[in-house]
Length: 463
Ligand SMILES: *[C@@H]1O[C@H](CO)[C@@H](O)[C@H](O)[C@H]1NC(C)=O
Ligand SMILES: *[C@@H]1O[C@H](CO)[C@@H](O)[C@H](O)[C@H]1NC(C)=O
Ligand SMILES: *[C@@H]1O[C@H](CO)[C@@H](O)[C@H](O)[C@H]1NC(C)=O
Ligand SMILES: *[C@@H]1O[C@H](CO)[C@@H](O)[C@H](O)[C@H]1NC(C)=O
Image (cartoon, rainbow, N blue to C red; front, side, top):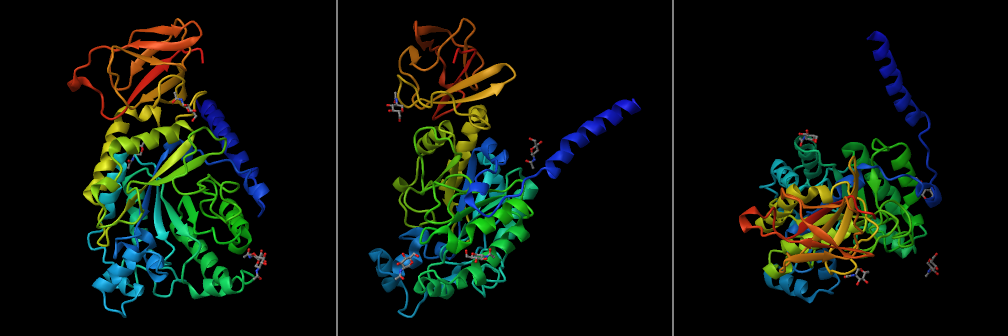
């Protein structure tokens, strides 16, 4: 027995030690940074929650999280009218901060909703373009949630709840630029030949954010005004990958300069709602919103501005099928609530994933992304002990007695099942060259495994 234990210990040591000994150091250039393998957790979990909360949650209306900029520049006429009608002429955007109260903020309740939704990671807005920090940053003067407004470390409380109540990976959104920061405007006036804003604000703040809260996802944004050199992007990411407390597990994106998006960095987020509709080689993310217009909560958004569950699932399915992750945004009210419509969408998604998660979590793109014959069918696949499983996700329940797919090539051993339904289905090949015709049994509505979208599982296909 003793010698066996000894061998096991040796094997474990042999597996662990080389990883640290040979762990690579990345250089502060894109060629080197681009070689870093994606930490595996990110592609397994597929679904993240994007959370917009800040001073913009107080006006909470036209132009959502862009209210300040759109009002100040006069680009949003409704914003200007709203201010003229409802506030005294000397009212400033900073005056909204004391009304950012957060009195109903219950991070445990949020964590429980996200867990029920089947979410795998978060991108909590640590700081948006308005510059307001949802943590007590030393570099924010008093423009943060502890000195004014809620008087709470919103980021700290949220991360503690996520980490203690769920297995969800904690991560943040961070905007590099701040519309009206005087240091930033100085650098703009100097045509970005100076870096006062970077030295006094952006870099110290980002190091503080990572060292203190250890987020394992860093969604960078607000980069697009200028190239990466101004943001010191490569130096910062090299530190993140080499020396930060999250060096082995952290994932970041590509929004690190107007010349960098969709070209370098971590996962490609390109532009908002990026969804190429076909397979791309690089791991990518669709940062989208349940409110079709804006990410910040809008009190006056009509029901028709919210995605229906069918629409949300359609984006999720297409995204995962084409190799992407989906980052689903909700806006929070000034008093700290996830309103029932967002909660309902999230819980509906969780209910669907309870039945069909096998086709989403840790799934890989298949040889075909959509079907060759039937529209609206998206495929995923997964290698299991029993061989490759292929999942065809349909969004319309068939009205006839058969259902035809063009892409699968059957063998004599092929089996067809429906996730959440006990019996196997009968089938015949659609043609000598491929395709499959499934005989649809009569399934009473009380025995339907789920609503909104259904997943057929094929095993022992030839492709
Ligand atoms: C985390 O995941 C593990 C393994 O799936 C599970 O047993 C555990 O209950 C989860 N913990 C929480 C807090 O959800
Ligand atoms: C600003 O910098 C850019 C890039 O270095 C340069 O092309 C441009 O001519 C500069 N503009 C002014 C007004 O100096
Ligand atoms: C930031 O970038 C500038 C210009 O590229 C460089 O001179 C400086 O050393 C960098 N600073 C840090 C802290 O990496
Ligand atoms: C599958 O996707 C491709 C590429 O987007 C498209 O051209 C084709 O029409 C789709 N096929 C069906 C059956 O919808």
